[in-house]
Amino acid sequence: MENHTTDTQTQNPFEHLLRIVEPEEVRLEPVEGDPHRARLIVAPLEPGYAITIGNALRRILLSSLEGYGITHLKIEGVLHEFSTIPGVYQDCTEIVLNLKQVRFKCLREQPINQATINIDIQGQSVFKAKDIERFTNDFQVVNGDLIICEMEPTTRLKMTLTIHRGRRYLPMEEFQDIDLEIGTIPVDAIFTPIKRVTFQVENVRLGKYTDYERLILDVTTDGTITPADAIYRALEILLHQFQNLTRFHPKGRITLPETTQQTQEETQQAGETIQVYEPSTTPQSKQEQAAEEMVKPSAKVLAIPIEQLDIPGRALRALTASGVRTVGDLLKYTEKDILQLRGVGKRAIEEIRKALLYYGIQWS
Image 1 (cartoon, rainbow, N blue to C red):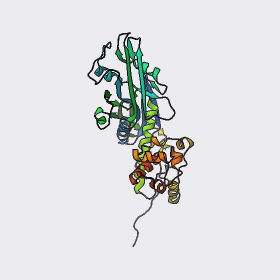
Image 2: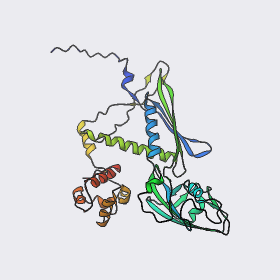
Image 3: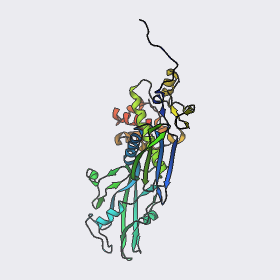
Image 4: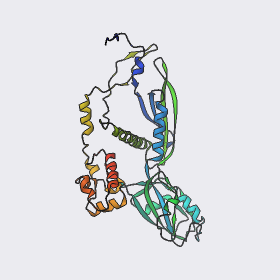
């Protein structure tokens, strides 16, 4: 069959459409007067990219970051949340609403899943959130000036707070299936450390083209995490989710190409340096080899307690009973070995595999 296609060296007038522009400006700008607020500014972005990235980051920030919150409490001499306490000006309902706003920052290197704080207040007229720090070495209260209640100085107030680590918002109805001791008051738990996330999209000019975009992501935290750390953690989660989507392809995990320096391109308005994404020239066999390589976990990852892997309770008890305490202990066994343990099924194996994959570990 005769080939009628001719290859000419004439410059392609649509060459700019073949390049995906990479952001030249990526910076975090603090907001004056608010140490817990900052703006991430990213530009230039391809048309439509800003709203796509902004929506994804906003959703992850609001729903997927971990934090600590009070899930239930018990006040001495109180049977239910509608009671009043002698010598205390606020009723239990108001005290619960105030305690719900207390923001805790864990001081341990390894996160705590659950903690109990026993509080005994006497000889003061105001009980503030910072007073809770006197009864625990594991947490810092970042909004210490929050008033929990006002009381007569002669009144003694004793209560027990139960704190959990979690995500998002957990209404008290979730505790209906949990057997709580009589007098224990459930609390709507606010775990998320993010108070507010908004973003806006602006058009920017790149050479003669005016349809590129700038993303301005505005993040406000509760003080238990910095805006920079919050955004970085959201990006980690988002990248991990996208890596999971590559399972359908035999190449497996995507190996990001090295950023190439594009030659300076003269535009009609002015000369500008544009960073572009170029397709990887790495041979396919090497990409496949890189995707199949197992990530060697660091000593810090190996020391992570298995309680942090979000393993089903029955399987967690079986692992603990077998002497598996950390990720390092777990990696000494294969999936087949763990499957032999009583209480560990295929579903648990899948959950363990997903949890390890989060840390870049391919378990088999």
